[in-house]
Amino acid sequence: MVLLDQLAADSAAAPATVDAILERLVDGDPDRQVAGILTYLALVPRTPFASRLIERWCADASAHPQAVQSFVQHARSYLRPPADAGQIRAFRLLDTTAHAVLAQWTRYAGEHRAEVLSDDQLAELRGAAGTADDIAQQIYFASGAFDDKRGRQGPSGDDLTGFADLAFPVLAKCAALRHPHSIHQAVETMIFLAPVDEARALHGVAEAIPADGPYASESLAGDLVIPYLQRLLAEQRPLVLHDERGVASFRHLLATFAVAGNQAALTLAYTFADVFR
Image (cartoon, rainbow, N blue to C red):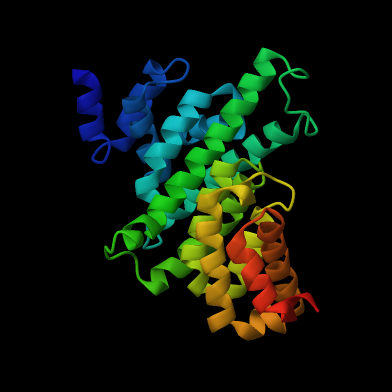
C-alpha cells in the first residue's frame, strides 16, 4: 500500500519510471488503486505499458470485466470539458469498450433467455450490460447533466459542443444493447446536450429507444421523454413538423410511448395530430 501511494504521487513527475515499475508488478487484472494510476498514465503522459494494457482491456472487455469497470470509473474525471488530448483519448477508449460489449451482447442473436444460454453466457451478458451502464453513467455525470438537475453550474456551451461530438457515438452504442438502464442514462445525457445540435439529439434519442422494448413503459422514461417532446413542439416546430427525418424521429418516439400506454403521449398525439399526417 505504501509503495502504491508513492507510485501514485510520482506518476506525474516521473511517469516513465512509474510505468516501468508497474510493468514488472502488474500480473493479471490489478486492483482499483493500480487501475487509477494506469488510467492516468495511459490518458495523460501516454506511457507505453499503461497504454497497451488499457487498450487490451477495452478491446476485450469480456475477458477483463473488473479491470474495465475500474478504468471506466476512473476515466470520468478525464471526460469532463474543456476538451484536451486526455479527454479525446478517454472517449476513444470508451468507444472501443462500448463496441466490444455491444459485440458481446449481439453474439447470441437475441437469444437472451436463461433456458437457452449457459450460466457462463448469461454471466457474460450481465457483464456486457453492466459495462454499458457504467460507460453511459460516467458520461452522464461528466456532461454536467446531474449538476444542472441540481441547479449547479456546469460546463459552458462552447465546451459542451466538443463534448457532445465525442459523447454521442459512445452513448448510441451503450443504448444499442437495449438495456433499459443504459438507454435511460444515454437518453438523459442526449437530451441535456440537445441545445448543442437539436436535430442530432432528436435522431439519437429516437434511435436509442426501441419501439418494442420495455423502456417506454417505465414511468421514469415517460417523465424524461414526453417533456422533451413537448419542448420540441414549442421551440423546434420546423424540425418536428416539417423536416422529413425530424418528423419520422418525433413520430417514432410519440407512437412508442403512446402504444406503451403513456397518457401524456396519447394526449400529445391527439393534440398535435399534424405529425401523423
